[in-house]
Image (cartoon, rainbow, N blue to C red; front, side, top):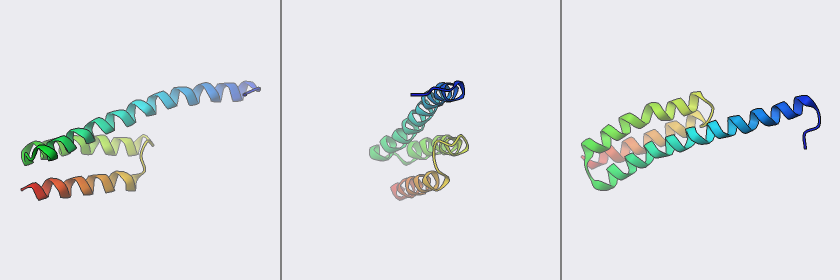
Length: 87
């Protein structure tokens, strides 16, 4: 348990950041799920549009420190390859 005022403040800050990061991660997952669903439906135009919407969201996650850069790049690469294969 935090005893010093500084440690108590850090605990409060960590709690706040955790909530914000959880919301960001959830938002990213939602966009990725939309791409997955579009791929499953077999509609390439819909999948391409969903992927185009998901890319900035993934990169925003990298900028905000929620995802590692290589993780986001890997996800984008694999999804774009799957969308391309639909055609």
